[in-house]
Amino acid sequence: MSGSRTRYLVGMAVDATGAGLYLPLSLLYFHHVTGMPIAQVGVVMTAGALFALVGNPIAGTLVDRLGARSVVVGGYVLRAVGFAAYPLVDSATTMFLAVALVAVGDGSFPPSIQALVAEIAEGTARDKLLAAQRSMRNAGLGLGGLAAGGALTIGSDAAYTGIVLATGVAYLAAAVIIGTIPLPARGRRGRAAIKGGYREVFANKPFLALALVNVPIAFGYMVLAVALPVYITQQLHAATGLVGALYAVNTIGIAVLQIPVTRMLVRYRRTRATALGALVIGASFVLFALLGAVSSATAVLLVGSFVATALFTAGELMHGATASALVSSAAPVETRGRHLSVYQFSWAIPTALAPAVLTALLSASAIGMWLVLAAGVVGSAAAMVRLEPRLPADAVRPKAVVTAAVPRPVETVMGEPVVGGPVAVETIVSARSVSVR
Image 1 (tube, helix red, strand yellow):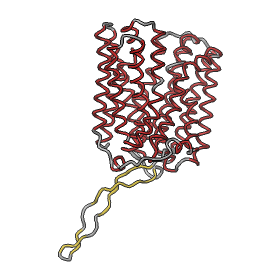
Image 2 (tube, one colour):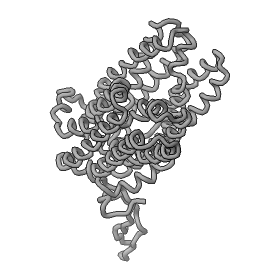
Image 3 (cartoon, helix red, strand yellow):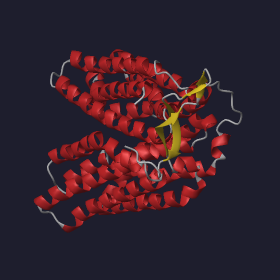
Image 4 (tube, helix red, strand yellow):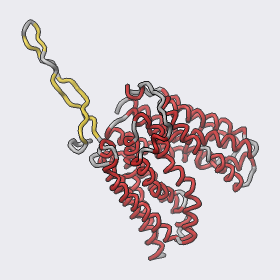
């Protein structure tokens, strides 16, 4: 792996470790330092978090004008400043301002980081880098969460403040690491201002369809955090500890298996791999529904829950990195930032609506919720296959960069031919005709 990609992965690991530190106490921190009720803290945090939707389109434009690396670094700095302000929060107003600042940085991250990956990796190397990123980020989130759990057992003001400041330092460290990544020529070229703004994106109907197809899958991704804990504990009446175990299966599974699974999938069309992943996720939802319909036996529920979660994880392994590579490859280079920004709304909107939508479905019918989600992701899989002919060929069928040996040109010395040794050159070949290992 090139030095740029190695440095990139180190930055992602540092970023994720910092995020993992803070995630377990996001609500608890402000409740602890301000004394506000949890419900009020939640409302203020949600209001501030909406600014992520503002940061997203701004980031898309800046990526096209300044380059992805600059926007990634700027987003990290914004978040670091926001976390540095957290210990100064003493009211709902100051809390809102600090959370909004961090949210703008959060919103700038998805389109800019996907664009950066597209600049430093091409072909199947892009799929593999995104797979390694997902693996590293899951590991980093887990490590950060463990460290936060240890600090929270102390329960003091100093422990809470230390976690928040450590998160800010991690973002600054990630900014330094990402900021020193050397870019290839294609990532350093001058960027002319592109007229038309987001009209260029909305005129790209196949890309918009790709974003719409993702919406049901994005809702499906949210079940682990939003619906599954309630379903397991209140509908299936299982022990609360089972939720943590199922979450661990998913997190560890992605950290360990994402790279080998993606290495296998780069031989195939990205559209087919993502569609298959959606189908497997749909199968996991059907199994979760069956658990609520056919049995209340503890052993059946226990085994069935782990099998369903394993299926969900397998679907996520097939879909996640490959879908990201498909989208970044389908976006035109000149307006890649804006295209990826629009696509990110297919994640951001379901993420914002999921708590309300999924809990409403769960309240109406727990089994019905799973079947609705299953129908949605299966429909997305079918739509993805139908969309395939309208997408750029090099986005659908990844290419592999391989090293080939070719002879040097024949030179002459004193009239006698001299043949040099082999020279390594990079050749782009179809991933269907080469074994990628």
